[in-house]
Image (cartoon, rainbow, N blue to C red; front, side):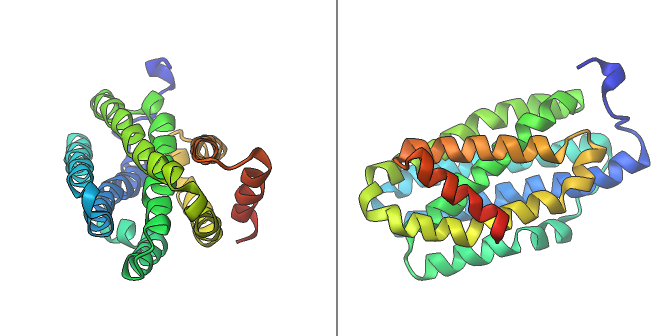
Amino acid sequence: MSDEALPDFTSATYKDAYSRINAIVIEGEQEAHDNYISLGTLIPDQADELARLARMELKHMKGFTACAANLGVDADMPFAREFFTPLRDNFQSALGEGKVVTCLLIQSLLIEAFAIAAYHIYIPVADPFARRITEAVVKDEYTHLNYGQEWLKANFDASRAELEQANRDNLPHVRRMLEGVAADAAVLQMEKEDLIEDFLIAYQEALTEIGFSTREIARMAAAALVG
Protein backbone atom coordinates (compact mmCIF):
# COMPACT_ATOMS: atom_id res chain seq x y z
CA MET A 1 0.00 0.00 0.00
CA SER A 2 1.38 3.40 -0.94
CA ASP A 3 1.84 6.11 1.65
CA GLU A 4 -0.86 8.17 -0.11
CA ALA A 5 -3.41 5.49 0.77
CA LEU A 6 -2.45 5.29 4.44
CA PRO A 7 -4.50 6.99 7.17
CA ASP A 8 -3.46 10.36 8.58
CA PHE A 9 -1.78 9.14 11.76
CA THR A 10 -1.70 12.68 13.18
CA SER A 11 -5.42 13.47 12.91
CA ALA A 12 -7.59 13.78 16.00
CA THR A 13 -10.08 11.29 14.53
CA TYR A 14 -7.36 8.69 13.98
CA LYS A 15 -5.87 9.16 17.43
CA ASP A 16 -9.29 8.87 19.07
CA ALA A 17 -10.03 5.55 17.35
CA TYR A 18 -6.48 4.36 17.93
CA SER A 19 -6.80 4.98 21.68
CA ARG A 20 -9.41 2.22 21.84
CA ILE A 21 -7.94 -0.18 19.26
CA ASN A 22 -4.50 0.03 20.85
CA ALA A 23 -5.98 -0.45 24.32
CA ILE A 24 -7.75 -3.61 23.16
CA VAL A 25 -4.45 -4.95 21.88
CA ILE A 26 -2.60 -4.10 25.09
CA GLU A 27 -5.34 -5.60 27.26
CA GLY A 28 -5.52 -8.68 25.05
CA GLU A 29 -1.82 -9.33 25.52
CA GLN A 30 -2.08 -8.79 29.30
CA GLU A 31 -5.03 -11.17 29.55
CA ALA A 32 -3.19 -13.72 27.40
CA HIS A 33 -0.26 -13.55 29.83
CA ASP A 34 -2.54 -14.09 32.80
CA ASN A 35 -4.43 -16.89 31.05
CA TYR A 36 -1.29 -18.83 30.16
CA ILE A 37 -0.04 -18.58 33.74
CA SER A 38 -3.44 -19.84 34.92
CA LEU A 39 -3.36 -22.71 32.42
CA GLY A 40 -0.09 -23.79 33.99
CA THR A 41 -2.04 -24.62 37.16
CA LEU A 42 -4.35 -26.92 35.14
CA ILE A 43 -1.56 -28.56 33.12
CA PRO A 44 1.32 -28.68 35.63
CA ASP A 45 3.61 -30.71 33.38
CA GLN A 46 3.35 -27.88 30.82
CA ALA A 47 3.78 -25.04 33.30
CA ASP A 48 7.28 -24.07 32.08
CA GLU A 49 6.20 -23.91 28.44
CA LEU A 50 3.08 -21.95 29.34
CA ALA A 51 5.18 -19.54 31.38
CA ARG A 52 7.37 -19.03 28.30
CA LEU A 53 4.31 -18.21 26.20
CA ALA A 54 3.15 -15.82 28.93
CA ARG A 55 6.48 -13.96 28.88
CA MET A 56 6.12 -13.51 25.12
CA GLU A 57 2.72 -11.89 25.66
CA LEU A 58 4.19 -9.39 28.14
CA LYS A 59 6.83 -8.48 25.58
CA HIS A 60 4.08 -7.89 23.04
CA MET A 61 2.18 -5.71 25.50
CA LYS A 62 5.23 -3.52 26.01
CA GLY A 63 5.69 -3.22 22.25
CA PHE A 64 2.11 -2.09 21.67
CA THR A 65 2.35 0.33 24.59
CA ALA A 66 5.33 1.86 22.78
CA CYS A 67 3.22 2.13 19.60
CA ALA A 68 0.73 4.36 21.43
CA ALA A 69 3.51 6.50 22.89
CA ASN A 70 5.02 6.89 19.43
CA LEU A 71 1.77 8.46 18.19
CA GLY A 72 1.23 10.49 21.35
CA VAL A 73 -1.93 8.53 22.22
CA ASP A 74 -3.21 7.49 25.66
CA ALA A 75 -4.72 4.01 25.42
CA ASP A 76 -8.31 3.82 26.73
CA MET A 77 -7.73 0.92 29.10
CA PRO A 78 -11.11 1.06 30.92
CA PHE A 79 -12.80 0.58 27.53
CA ALA A 80 -10.53 -2.36 26.73
CA ARG A 81 -11.09 -4.09 30.07
CA GLU A 82 -14.84 -3.86 29.54
CA PHE A 83 -14.43 -5.11 25.96
CA PHE A 84 -12.89 -8.40 27.14
CA THR A 85 -15.31 -8.97 30.05
CA PRO A 86 -17.42 -11.77 28.47
CA LEU A 87 -14.43 -13.91 27.45
CA ARG A 88 -12.57 -13.10 30.68
CA ASP A 89 -15.55 -14.14 32.81
CA ASN A 90 -16.03 -17.36 30.85
CA PHE A 91 -12.32 -18.19 31.09
CA GLN A 92 -12.32 -17.60 34.84
CA SER A 93 -15.43 -19.74 35.30
CA ALA A 94 -13.87 -22.57 33.30
CA LEU A 95 -10.61 -22.19 35.23
CA GLY A 96 -12.47 -22.49 38.52
CA GLU A 97 -14.12 -25.70 37.29
CA GLY A 98 -10.83 -27.13 36.02
CA LYS A 99 -12.04 -27.15 32.41
CA VAL A 100 -8.73 -27.04 30.61
CA VAL A 101 -10.35 -27.70 27.21
CA THR A 102 -12.63 -24.66 27.50
CA CYS A 103 -9.75 -22.49 28.73
CA LEU A 104 -7.61 -23.56 25.76
CA LEU A 105 -10.40 -22.91 23.27
CA ILE A 106 -10.95 -19.39 24.64
CA GLN A 107 -7.29 -18.39 24.86
CA SER A 108 -5.32 -20.46 22.38
CA LEU A 109 -7.93 -20.67 19.63
CA LEU A 110 -10.45 -17.81 19.84
CA ILE A 111 -8.31 -15.01 21.28
CA GLU A 112 -5.21 -15.94 19.29
CA ALA A 113 -7.19 -16.25 16.03
CA PHE A 114 -8.80 -12.88 16.83
CA ALA A 115 -5.36 -11.35 17.36
CA ILE A 116 -3.88 -12.90 14.21
CA ALA A 117 -6.76 -11.57 12.12
CA ALA A 118 -6.48 -8.08 13.59
CA TYR A 119 -2.72 -7.93 13.14
CA HIS A 120 -2.87 -9.21 9.55
CA ILE A 121 -5.42 -6.56 8.59
CA TYR A 122 -3.61 -3.83 10.52
CA ILE A 123 -0.06 -4.31 9.21
CA PRO A 124 -0.64 -2.86 5.70
CA VAL A 125 -2.22 0.31 7.12
CA ALA A 126 -0.04 0.76 10.21
CA ASP A 127 2.43 3.56 10.82
CA PRO A 128 6.04 2.42 10.17
CA PHE A 129 6.92 2.02 13.87
CA ALA A 130 3.81 -0.03 14.67
CA ARG A 131 4.22 -2.11 11.52
CA ARG A 132 7.62 -3.37 12.65
CA ILE A 133 6.29 -4.22 16.10
CA THR A 134 3.19 -5.97 14.76
CA GLU A 135 5.03 -8.02 12.15
CA ALA A 136 7.22 -9.48 14.89
CA VAL A 137 4.27 -10.14 17.19
CA VAL A 138 2.09 -11.97 14.67
CA LYS A 139 4.76 -14.64 14.18
CA ASP A 140 4.64 -15.37 17.90
CA GLU A 141 0.85 -15.58 17.92
CA TYR A 142 0.96 -18.54 15.54
CA THR A 143 3.16 -20.29 18.11
CA HIS A 144 0.52 -19.68 20.76
CA LEU A 145 -2.37 -20.84 18.58
CA ASN A 146 -0.34 -23.91 17.66
CA TYR A 147 0.21 -24.78 21.33
CA GLY A 148 -3.49 -25.04 22.07
CA GLN A 149 -4.18 -26.69 18.73
CA GLU A 150 -1.62 -29.45 19.34
CA TRP A 151 -2.75 -30.12 22.92
CA LEU A 152 -6.38 -30.39 21.83
CA LYS A 153 -5.44 -32.56 18.85
CA ALA A 154 -3.58 -34.97 21.14
CA ASN A 155 -6.61 -35.11 23.45
CA PHE A 156 -9.31 -34.79 20.79
CA ASP A 157 -11.55 -37.74 21.59
CA ALA A 158 -11.82 -36.78 25.24
CA SER A 159 -12.19 -33.07 24.39
CA ARG A 160 -14.70 -33.11 21.51
CA ALA A 161 -17.93 -32.58 23.46
CA GLU A 162 -16.47 -29.87 25.67
CA LEU A 163 -14.95 -28.11 22.64
CA GLU A 164 -18.33 -28.01 20.90
CA GLN A 165 -20.01 -26.60 24.00
CA ALA A 166 -17.23 -24.05 24.59
CA ASN A 167 -17.55 -22.97 20.98
CA ARG A 168 -21.31 -22.43 21.40
CA ASP A 169 -20.73 -20.45 24.58
CA ASN A 170 -17.90 -18.24 23.34
CA LEU A 171 -17.91 -17.79 19.56
CA PRO A 172 -20.92 -15.43 19.69
CA HIS A 173 -18.92 -13.16 22.03
CA VAL A 174 -16.14 -12.90 19.44
CA ARG A 175 -18.65 -11.92 16.77
CA ARG A 176 -20.00 -9.19 19.05
CA MET A 177 -16.46 -8.05 19.85
CA LEU A 178 -15.66 -7.73 16.15
CA GLU A 179 -18.85 -5.77 15.58
CA GLY A 180 -18.20 -3.59 18.61
CA VAL A 181 -14.80 -2.53 17.30
CA ALA A 182 -15.83 -2.14 13.65
CA ALA A 183 -16.34 1.64 13.62
CA ASP A 184 -12.96 2.39 15.22
CA ALA A 185 -11.25 -0.21 13.04
CA ALA A 186 -12.70 1.43 9.92
CA VAL A 187 -11.03 4.74 10.89
CA LEU A 188 -7.74 2.80 10.84
CA GLN A 189 -8.77 1.44 7.39
CA MET A 190 -9.43 -2.04 8.76
CA GLU A 191 -12.73 -3.34 7.36
CA LYS A 192 -15.03 -5.46 9.50
CA GLU A 193 -15.65 -8.00 6.73
CA ASP A 194 -11.91 -8.53 6.35
CA LEU A 195 -11.46 -8.96 10.10
CA ILE A 196 -14.28 -11.52 10.31
CA GLU A 197 -13.05 -13.45 7.29
CA ASP A 198 -9.45 -13.59 8.51
CA PHE A 199 -10.58 -14.64 12.00
CA LEU A 200 -12.81 -17.42 10.69
CA ILE A 201 -10.04 -18.73 8.42
CA ALA A 202 -7.55 -18.96 11.29
CA TYR A 203 -10.12 -20.45 13.69
CA GLN A 204 -11.48 -23.00 11.22
CA GLU A 205 -8.00 -24.08 10.15
CA ALA A 206 -7.21 -24.78 13.81
CA LEU A 207 -10.42 -26.80 14.25
CA THR A 208 -9.55 -28.81 11.13
CA GLU A 209 -6.08 -29.55 12.45
CA ILE A 210 -7.51 -30.62 15.81
CA GLY A 211 -9.70 -33.21 14.11
CA PHE A 212 -13.15 -31.81 13.31
CA SER A 213 -14.71 -32.54 9.92
CA THR A 214 -15.70 -29.84 7.45
CA ARG A 215 -19.37 -30.46 8.23
CA GLU A 216 -18.77 -30.20 11.98
CA ILE A 217 -16.80 -26.98 11.57
CA ALA A 218 -19.56 -25.42 9.46
CA ARG A 219 -22.04 -26.23 12.21
CA MET A 220 -19.71 -24.82 14.87
CA ALA A 221 -19.12 -21.62 12.86
CA ALA A 222 -22.88 -21.12 12.63
CA ALA A 223 -22.91 -20.60 16.40
CA ALA A 224 -21.52 -17.12 15.75
CA LEU A 225 -24.69 -16.22 13.86
CA VAL A 226 -27.24 -17.37 16.40
CA GLY A 227 -25.65 -16.37 19.72
